[in-house]
Amino acid sequence: MTPTDSELIARALSESRAEAFGMLVERHQSAVRRFLRHLTRGDAATADDLAQETFIGAYRGLARFRADSRFETWLLGIAYNRFRSLRRQGHPEAPQSGAEAGEALEPPAERLTDLQQDLASAMARLSEHEQTALRLCFQFGLSHADIASATGWPLGTVKTHVARGKGQLRELLSVWNPKT
Amino acid sequence: MEPEDLTPPDEPGFDDRLRAGLARPALADGGFTARVLRSLPPRPAVSHYRSWLRLSWAGAGSGFLLAVWACSAWLGRQMACPRGAWPVPDLLGNAWLYLAFAAALASCLMAWRATDPAPGG
Image: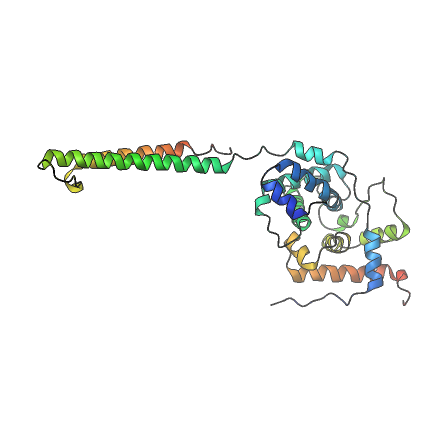
């Protein structure tokens, strides 16, 4: 039987620390790296460096993890903080907010369906925070409370970003809606 | 106060399409896990061991301290009192006893500090 995250965390805190933590990394690396690729506008190298720092940070602070949210939510929160720190330091590879924030790049190797391409183009017109909130909600399956916990934004702000982002997408993608 | 819920009513069709449009296949590990495991900091020192070591030092130090106190008191009493009297310490009258007490306390503290982990270690 596949061990749950909680079981692996308990194991990682006692014996066979690296082995159990390795299983957690393997399980969650995709979500963390994907999220960071979105934040870094598709810069896979910077995203993977930040993901590595995220997991090292999680390893150091594993004892502080409280099971009041999912482990992945906690990891995405650490990842978001790492990205913000990088940007605060004025790292040239960390994109700034503003117009260019909308130009989220998809890795060229990935083939997107028409639906995904339409949505990617529409998402590029949203603000950085709206994109992040929508991705956390619809791509990573986080609740509004989880997004607030991961990003440090107030719950009302999260709801506003999601609602505004969805409203704009609805207009931009009105062809999806047969009623309009 | 709970912020007003600004989320419009769920639109199953639209939300499902958003989910489908944002869905991406899982990224292949491609050696990422191995890279993270290689860069993990070394396992921290076993804290139980340090705790027990500290407790042992504290116990030994306290025992030593008590022994010094009892011996000093008994000797002081022997010198000052008639043979056969119970050696009750006369702390106020024996300044040298305080010195012995301070020395024992200092040795105990030094032993405690000796077991402190090095900074960052």
